[in-house]
Image (tube, rainbow, N blue to C red; front, side):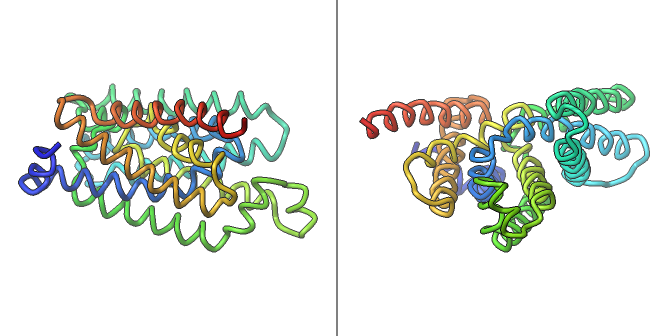
Length: 278
């Protein structure tokens, strides 16, 4: 691994990748425990794949009409729209939430593919968002990920107690006079922002794994959501850093290596949790 640390000093793109991994670990660590406790990973999956429509739209506009919109801005707009739409359908109870999520999942991907088909040339950059390419992160990506992190920290911090109550017991939250529907929508907005921060790192296909696995590993061993968040941030940082190093040394896809490391530790944690209960 010494060659990796030496390469960090020589190659700016590798330093950008490391910083991006650390920044996204913050978002994952804060939002991941909410996702695991509330069991809304499937909602996150719908939001993640709806993002592809925004990426396709921005890529088409930039290529055909000469605009200079950052792809993550289009991803953010579609992610927030999908989060609010999914939340409204889920809270209204008039339609099956699973069906709506599946529809958004498919429609988002279809819209992205249609815009991709109407765009001349090969969309290598757009493909990197689909499968993830942390080595292509540039300064503008880092700035946007920092902004997303700040939004998640501020909103998550201000609404921490209320969000925790809603995650564990919605009836109790309602009895306390809290606006449960609004807090549920706020939680989905946080998930949407985290998804956008992650798409450059592991891609839309693997984003839910990195969002939920660090939190799923630590939750059985801690007694508070705040403690789970702190440990999940540390784990996320370890997974992204070690995955980046391993992929650099062995010339492997970084996103896939990060997820494999997280998955391996998760399955080991299941055995450890069962052993400690005994």
